[in-house]
Image 1 (cartoon, helix red, strand yellow):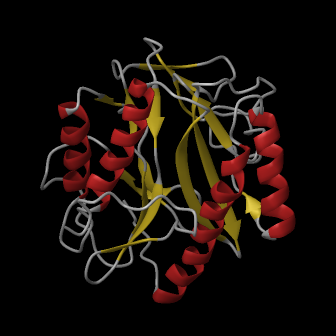
Image 2: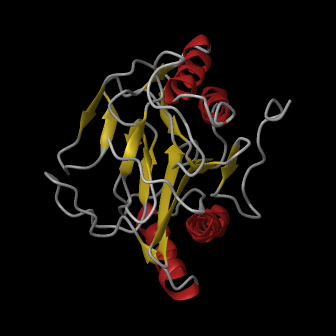
Amino acid sequence: MTITLKSAADIAAMRIAGRLASEVLDYLTPHVKPGVSTEQLDQLAHDYIVNVQQAIPAPLNYCPPGYTPYPKSICTSINHQVCHGIPNERPLKNGDIVNIDVTVIKDGWHGDTSRMFVVGEGSIAAKRLCAFTYEAMWKGIAKVRPGARLGDIAHAIQTFAENAGFSIVREFCGHGIGQKFHEEPQVLHYGRPGTLEELVPGMVFTIEPMINAGKREIKEMGDGWTIVTKDRSLSAQWEHTIAVTDTGYEVLTVSAGSPPPPAFVGA
């Protein structure tokens, strides 16, 4: 496995790309309400990235081996959709939950982040899942420092989610990122502490747990992209891009509208 370490200049460029990705989510936030379609959100995001940010939406026409090109500029995964949901004309309904996943390329560097949105008035169960998934991501982020291991991140996320009665999707994981959308290492969200790669300054990767209210089993839909829970239970995901620093970590995907870290971070 070849992990590409980033220089201070590289990370400075990624900090810009990460902020832009987060600012797309800030821009979309007031538009996420009952009656809007994910197709409309995709068009808003596309125009903002291309015309305002002078950047490139990384998902558009992204085509890993064995896939058809992804047809939209963002991913929108609703309710029991786990990830890679394709925006369409169906209006969002009151009580839906939706993950919006944005990756921006600026000056050749990627910034990758996602947030959960509760449309209108969500159920207590839906809001709890979204909140616990956010905290689970941060449980993982808080483990990032030189000398720690990827298994430490994985274990922190898994134990927190499973102790709350949720399950972790295992087929998808975080990933290294830089001038490529997906690089080494793979960042699992389940596992044993003290295992897998050791973290060193200059590593940059995403932490993006996908957590289901029901069982962890998933399946792919006929569009070749959308992943759903087999039992149709709700699924939530949050994502940040993280750089390993000399003393700990830096979250690269932050902007004025980013939700604050949970109280336990830095405690």
